[in-house]
Structure formats: C-alpha cells, structure tokens
Length: 366
Image 1 (cartoon, helix red, strand yellow):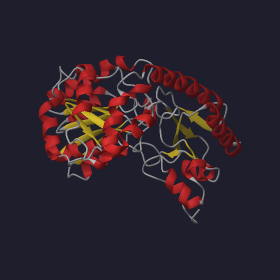
Image 2: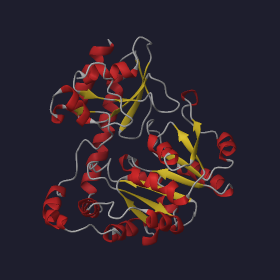
Image 3: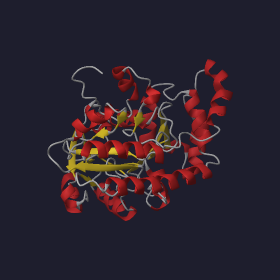
Image 4: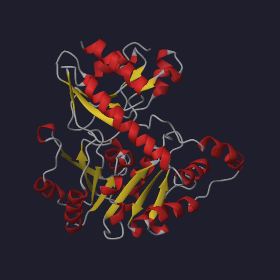
C-alpha cells in the first residue's frame, strides 16, 4: 500500500482501490463499507444476463418502457410517473438540474450525493443536522423553521448512516409542512426492502395523493447489483417529464433494464431469506461488539450498524487503516455532517464474515 495512504473514500465499496494499493486481488477483500445484500444477487440472474448477452449489439431502449411498465404495476401508478436511472445517483444529479432548483434542505447525517447533486447543479444546499444527544430524532418546529424558502427536502428512510426508520405518520407531517411551504419532499428508500414490513413505512402508496412527494428507489443494495447501476424515481408526472426530457440518452444499459424486470418477478423466497439473515446477523454483530467497552452501537433496522469509538486514543480513520491491513473495509463516517471522526459504519454480512470482523475489532480495541 502507498505510504501515507488513509484509504478514506467519499463512499463505501472501493475494493478496487484497496486491491491496487495492497497488491492483492479484490476477491480477498471483505467489504463492510458498502451496504450490499450478503446473499449476493438472486439465483437466475446469471442465466438471464447470459441469455441477453447477444442483444448488447443493439442500443438499449431509451424509454426503459418494459421496466417502467412493471414498476407502474408494482406501485399502481402511471408510466408517466416513473423515471429510471443509471443508479439513483444519476437521478439525484438530474433532478436539481431539470427543475432549476435554487435552494434545498437536507436532513443530516445523510448520503453525500444529495449535497453533491445540489451543488454541482447550482442549487444552494441547507442542512438540518440531527444530533446524537436527541437520538437523531427530528423536531418538527425546527424543521418548519428551516423549511422557509426551501424548494425541496431530502431524507432517507431507513436513514443512512443511522439505520433508523421514520414512521409514516411523521413523514406525512413533513409532507404536509412541505406542501404548505411549496416544497417537494424526496424520500430515499434505498434500504427499505431490508425491513421486515417495508409496506408499513414506505410512502409509495401515497404517490397518487401528494403532488409534492418524490420517492427514490434502488435495485443496488437489496439485490446486490451495484456494478449494473439501476435506480428509479417516482412522483409528480410534470417533474418526471422535465427530468426525462433532460436525461442523457441510453443512460440505463440494456442488461440493467433486463435484470430490473427479472427482479420484479417471483423473488419472494430471496426476499424472505435476505430479511431473516439480516435480522439475525445484525443482532449477532450488535451483541458481540456490544461487549467491547470502547464501542457504542446505535439501534438500526437496516442492513448496517452505526458505531462510535468511545476512547479518545483511537479514531475511526485510524481504525479503518488498521483494518485495511487485515483486508477489511469499514466506512469511516467522519465526512458525514453532524458526525465526527469517532463514528464508523459496518454492513451486515454472513456469519463467517462477521466473525472475522469481530475478531479483528476485538484484537485492535482490547
């Protein structure tokens, strides 16, 4: 590894950089920095990709028509209410550009691409930082005060990096406040499929009731296909139309479109197995790491845990460097707004993999 390298990325999941710097194969890396389903992609996807491989001699459908039709059936909305993107990040950057937004509010700590998408497209970001002292809970009065002059609000459900879930009743209160202030509410549900009962908190059933609601979804995390890049946004047809008019042609590749269609059919067994594994292994990680006096663990309902080092002699950046030497990646959270350099995040993986991380952390921290 290069001398002085801190291996600190704006996102998790950079196994390629670790492989380059260490001189090892990426297959030898255990990546706890990216919150991807540890079961991998569902059985059958490989065959689907191989079957459609000859079609890459053609351009992909720029309308993503077949995939949008399946999504419309799933969410019981019209085709004109859906835009598919090259991952959710493309859509986060396209939205402020298409709407020519001037100001947006981000509920922090949060995914960095909300802020980047605004800044890169000339929109001024504002921030409402939730504090650990308040349990990362939102004060409605403070939210309403911050909302003044905002055109859009970004939040994630479940929250990233805390893993906490916003109840639908709270989100409806936010929606109403946004509506009266002339603002859109964008809810990022990238991790919602990992919940036991996502239908209880998802806002997709409300899409036909609220013109100012936008819901962002990703295939990446739950179906373990980050390399294919596939996400979508659903909401107000006027907004979606403006985005589609400004979207670069053929941004969603052909194989991603085909895989997306496959993932919307007969995945009940995969979904159930994934949720059981995540619930069991999240509890296992929390119990084992909870025995360490030097770590505080925050409650999570997602497929990851937020942790804080409680002793000042070691910070998350140094811990991440120590783990890199063991070919383990964690997410240093010091670049999340509202979090300092003692916070880090770990993905929930399989039992053998989790045991490797636990052993390494115990060795370093005790």
